[in-house]
Image (cartoon, rainbow, N blue to C red; front, side, top):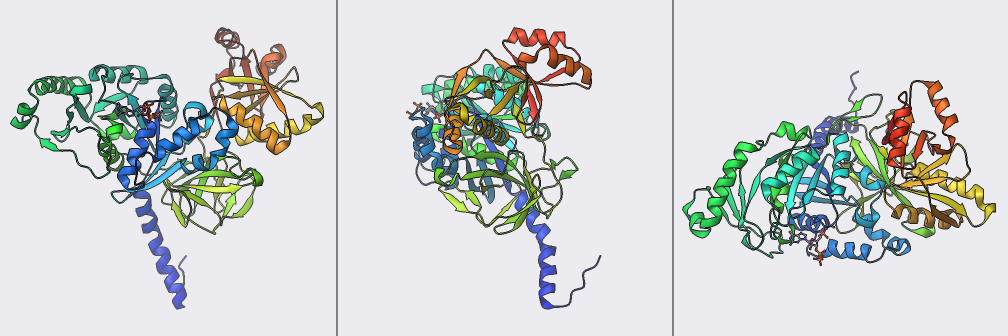
Length: 547
Ligand code: G4P
């Protein structure tokens, strides 16, 4: 239908709306949203800091690090809670690099490892995998990579700590390929290691980047010497260069050449070597993210898939952080923008509740502070203040019924049963757990037989958080105790009768979660395996999608 353009205002509006798609497309194109996956101590905090330093987002090294020690100085949840403001501010860091807007999402590790850690990865478009080159692939890296694989997220790999004695680089690549089942395409190759670390050779550019230790400034440059056969290199490092040439020959023969398509499909990872603490190799990673990692892509929203460049705004909540300000029971819902342009003050529709929300006090996250958002595009994260009516997985739009998919719940690794000191508070307990379960703070299972609720989590701190929130928000003094349960699986089947039989015969270990899904609570790995074997008509799932 053609719009009749009469008044000057209309003319302007028409011109504006004609420009809008181009503006949105440009903004989407220059966005990169990623998270860091690593095992504790591999160097995530150090690298985050250097990335921010590079972009000029922070002036001084030590800032992120200080936050981390503040967070980990204690295992006491109440103490951690006092740091909440800080940890929210560092949950999402937005900065500029080479005219691109980079959103770096924190993936909580160590003690605050929780389901949030996994869910954050559903909101990114790529991931940076940091590996301690002395240790190789470690447990948490494997888990996090599995989550990335669910969405074929492209992964850039950084082999850190080359300034120390590390394992043999070829062996490291081998391990990555065999354990993580991902093809490796080395982009830089280390020259020596530890005390004899000389730098890296860029396989695609045929250049050597010379290592210098302990440089803390952002715009430092490392000397570049071009050509692996450059006589200067031979003069400087005769031994190392002979070794390098030999290795490069091996690498060319044995490893995969970098292939952008395979990287984007999540099949192959470009590998960089460096030293985060020395800021060495960091620029190369940032460049890889800008040059190779994808801008926001289409997302499945059940009824159809949504392109990031569509004009109407849409997005979904992937994390809720509570008790920012305990006095107000303030919670922030972290929303990933999937399409369109978000503007402060605009009205959006909360689809599950069918309610219009006027979003006037939205926060964005800059490296330095929480700031008010004026506008946001696909790939950006905005924080919506809310009082408990938003849940993980909730979608927002300008009206269309979209339900973004792919926000998973993970079978918990830790279990507790719940008891309360004051039996009169049983109703509040159930209400509190129901709400905390819906919000995704913890998983709540109600066994078919036996009255005690079972809580499940992927990180133990989740229990402390829940205990503290039950007390503060619902006035319930709950005691958590160990249980005999060691793992849980969601159960489904087309065979309705089999499900009923299953429930009737194993009632003590069959439970329903907060969303009403049937789950099997196993007492051991053997028990789980035997049960699976005995009930071939049923499927046992380690993850479930948000309903
Ligand atoms: P994380 O967030 O992944 O847990 O790791 P973090 O950055 O805190 O780094 C863990 C340890 O590894 C820190 O030492 C850090 O200084 C060190 N580290 C990080 N990158 C490098 C590197 O390139 N080379 C070397 N040699 N060490 C590196 P720490 O002793 O635990 O802490 P701190 O006393 O240095 O603060």
